[in-house]
Amino acid sequence: MNAKVVASKCLGGEANTGGKMVAPRRNIAAAITLLFVSPLVAEYLLGDLPLTLLPAMIVLAPAYGGAALLIRETARRAGRGWPTMLLLGAAYTLIAEGLATQSLFNHDYMRMHMHLLDHAYIPALGIGAWWTLFMFNLHTFWSMGVSIALVEALFPSDDEVPWLGWIGDSVVVIVFVLGTAANFSMNLTRNQFIAAHAQLVSVAALSVLLIVAAFLLPARRLPKADDRAVPGPWITGAMTFVLGLGVMYTPPRWGWATVGTLLVIDVFFLAAVTFFSRQAQWSALHTLSLAAGGAAAYGVHAFTQKPLLGGLVAMRVSNAVLFAVAVWSIWLGVRRVIRCQTGY
Image 1 (tube, rainbow, N blue to C red):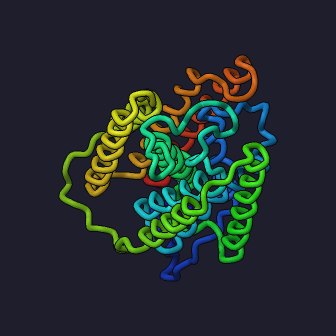
Image 2 (cartoon, helix red, strand yellow; image 1 turned 180 degrees about the vertical axis):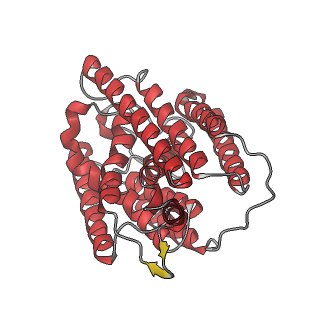
Image 3 (cartoon, rainbow, N blue to C red; image 1 turned 90 degrees about the horizontal axis):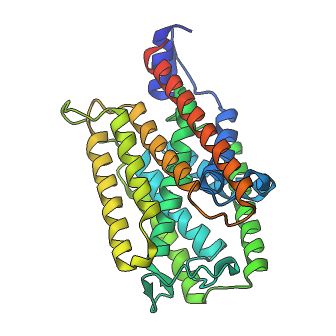
């Protein structure tokens, strides 16, 4: 395949050969990769679960991976990009933590006596402002955003087109629903907790509003701004790494000060990415750098987190293995993106 054809595919997942447009091919490998990368990032790279508990992927892959794949496929099929995917990720946060696990309302989630809702507690809503905002950060930016960006970098020639057909997407919907139902059942058995009816209805309504909002955004991409200077991928990646550590290490005991800090970090990150991504020099390497910085922040934080399950030695070995795999995946993604952009 010559460089011109490769470059054409990298721009839109299609190749124009001899004046005849070739339809994008299905990419089952990319879909399966995302199905497993999302839970690996969300639970294992974060440091919540060690690799000795990999069998939990039977439930986690459909729940996390099914959601990430469904979000990515829905947005790309509609010709939309990251704003839509992030809003859908926020909707997933409410579905996962408000309806499936109901951790947003449970004062003793998983019976671990962690008092997650005590920090900046809002009695009228029965939620902790810190925990709710923290979950929005973890699921929207990491579980969904980082995972999707990493896998799209591994398959750069198909990064803006659907990977599956309608049959495949229908299967993904079923997988996600079954995974979420299994997650709900397991948490109900473990916690013996059901949130108030008003809380469940409110979360369901808000998740629907976020999904609708995701598709009310303009589908047409804004034209690139003037060719202003854009920080290199190393800088954007380092920025994301520092901001990610800020999210992970800001003490929840600060209460509303923690909530304010997280909001400042979120607004700064979204504003900076929105501004720079509109510049002509913004590239797929920059997008990958954001995912790389986020993944690195997770990996570093995992080494300082007290294991929730399993022994300390097993957890630290798991942390090291997963961090190494993350670095290798980022390096492979960089190579593939550069090759896709240059045709060599």
